[in-house]
Length: 215
Ligand SMILES: *[C@@H]1O[C@H](CO)[C@@H](O)[C@H](O)[C@H]1NC(C)=O
Ligand SMILES: *[C@@H]1O[C@H](CO)[C@@H](O)[C@H](O)[C@H]1NC(C)=O
Ligand SMILES: *[C@@H]1O[C@H](CO)[C@@H](O)[C@H](O)[C@H]1NC(C)=O
Ligand SMILES: *[C@@H]1O[C@H](CO)[C@@H](O)[C@H](O)[C@H]1NC(C)=O
Ligand SMILES: *[C@@H]1O[C@H](CO)[C@@H](O)[C@H](O)[C@H]1NC(C)=O
Image 1 (tube, rainbow, N blue to C red):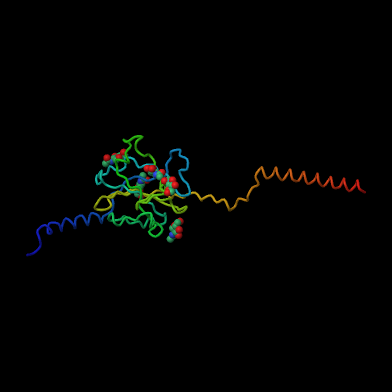
Image 2 (cartoon, helix red, strand yellow):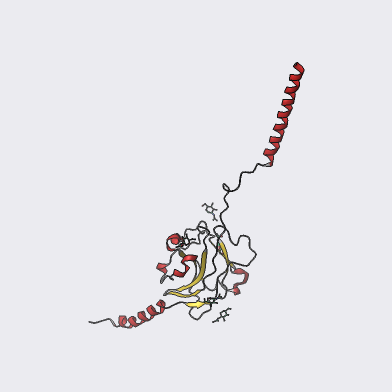
């Protein structure tokens, strides 16, 4: 009986790929950054807009079929980020508050190419999918952060390459109408108050005149 030959041949192969995925990622010398395009609202209370990482994924280990994810992390958790070893392990936005990081905006390197010109997207708005129902949603961010982001390349065997982490990104505080702004009187209210007080003083004068007259 013994081992089927196929499995014997497979064993060293599995060991080899196991060792490969265990080693560190191929570094990509690129740091994601908030876009310098003159955009309205490049940072809001629940979104921020990055430059698209065009032409950065030409490393030898990266293929056209690989997924390029954006990793979003709370700044203080970025150092403890462990790249997911398989697609099943990918943390999504739904578990962000537990895991402290998630993957979103799946793309491939032909999308991140300057050759696409105006057809390709040139900025990425993180947090812009308010109504999304997919698991890998780009959901609105839950608070001011600060956050850090990096791009992570994954193939079917696991993570392949990654960029540097961005600088800290802090969102705007949401505008609160109830707080710190006393309700200001509108122009209409002021006019009505003025007219009423004039009428009241006229009435008062009339009363005084009547009083003097009857005296
Ligand atoms: C990425 O990080 C490495 C190591 O910290 C650094 O040497 C390199 O300058 C960084 N690249 C960019 C584009 O900032
Ligand atoms: C990848 O693209 C960058 C930016 O265009 C370039 O500087 C680098 O030499 C390229 N690397 C390879 C291996 O082609
Ligand atoms: C969110 O941004 C991405 C990339 O910029 C874009 O493709 C997508 O259409 C946007 N979605 C919404 C709902 O605006
Ligand atoms: C989100 O869903 C609501 C109700 O289903 C719809 O009215 C709204 O237009 C949607 N917004 C976007 C950005 O798709
Ligand atoms: C990390 O940062 C988040 C958001 O700013 C904060 O809620 C959390 O308490 C911080 N955790 C630690 C361990 O400092």
